[in-house]
Image (tube, rainbow, N blue to C red; front, side, top):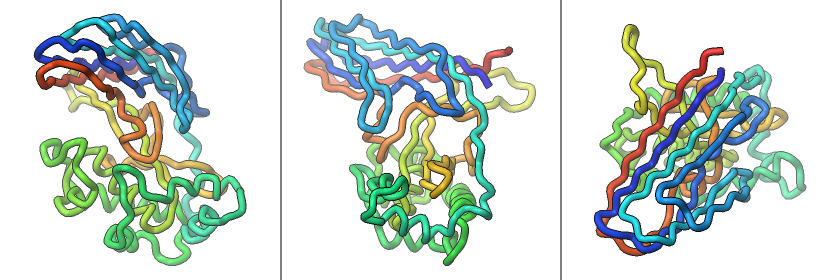
Length: 292
């Protein structure tokens, strides 16, 4: 599938900001199943500094500074991305989940132990025995890892309700677990916390999902939104994505932008400003399939 993606972020500050520094994770990643043919980030007012670099996790990031007084910021990222469905292994033939756990905890450097850093706590995710207990029914002894992940993904989908008013970007995993409701970011954090509590490496993925309108209805421009899911390490096959919000393993409708330990590593746009009186935020995302 070929997509044109527009992600527009608008900040209003109420009064002039004298200087602002921002870091953006808006450039989709190049992957075997994802190719980027075009990307442009435009910022109004024009930055006085604008640099691009690759972070620790391999994400392309943009740092920019606006050094002139302004009471409004508009950042618009436009991408053209081609997606092909990733090749997934036979779930029943993947290694038992405990074998993967033990390989990733080894003190001998291997591809498995190298990803072991994703087994530990991160700024927004803490391991808890109660989370290991919640995940445990999906992970009986010797169950193939991907079979367990598919089952676990479905349980979150069934047990938790999507509710955009139930949480904020700062809501902790413990509260999401208690409320049994939240949004895609919450469900990704919850899944990662559960898997890490079992000793498995898991990471947070940010990106986009093409949404389909109800039958007979036209697409609404800007109605799509940023999306989030998780990846788990599967020995011999690498990282495998899972989307608990929709109970699927992502295919050709998910666009990967960045990954890290949790949301704090991949926030689409964050920054520090001097001045202003509070602020308002508006985000519009459009994922449009391109006819070929």
